[in-house]
Length: 361
Image 1 (tube, rainbow, N blue to C red):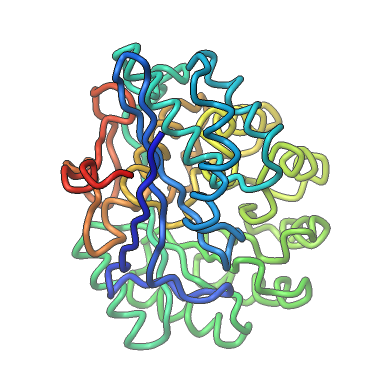
Image 2: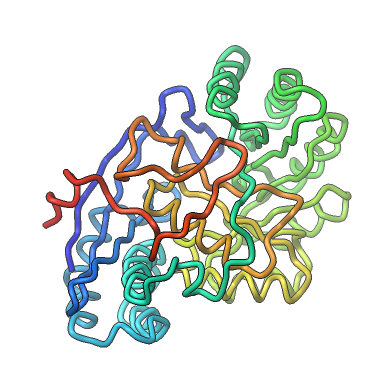
């Protein structure tokens, strides 16, 4: 098992500024596992301390000192058993576990010589609609939108949760620049109080907003329900990390859709299981983003395609092929900004650039 720290700047015109701060650079940890038959599997720890409490440094420490000693030498199958073992060894840290779990699933699918989506039970589709975040005010927002359009994006969500008056003005500006028919949602990242959220959602109704993502704090399920009762669809994001969070959300009837991450869930297998559970209770599912690089984005894509039910109303956030100033992949994902498409190569279907492969510790 090998790791490689990677730090990349975000495309300067696509930097996201939201209620949890600006995301202008990402420090990730790439993970490689090798089977006894010399099959390599790759994963990526996509974590930012401000958001998840994890980063590449903590991930490398726990992988080297806690997870690798227990996993190296074990059978690769069933991969789900290795995911469960990681939960017994290390509390929390889902993004760290997800990076290693993705590498294990990648190696497993490559051993079978099938795409990961097939190993996960799919695919149910071969392309996934996507959207991009717009943030900033005035001319700054205009420039982000212009850059996004040049990359092919035609669906967006606006970062809000920074003060209701400014949020409404920002959404009004966004609607003006994207046009009256363009898909547009808002994402508060839990930045509103319950009363602010209710006021904001009512004021935003006239701008044709299609959804509001995480309008209140992650623990405030009653607040999510109160916003949902106004009539605008609610997407839960920060409120749902693991399975117990999802169960609580379902019981509270607090959201119309849940934004699932490979990272938040703890790995591809866990994300798939959570998506299946949400769909069984009639909840829409989309694949959300923590600013994944190419390997993480490939894992998002395969999970999205392996889900029996994926939202037809809300685009997902598989943006790794566009979000960074450079790509870590030898060959980028097939994405034109409107959709990202599944290939037919085994495993994740991607590998890091040769210089990164040679740099693994």
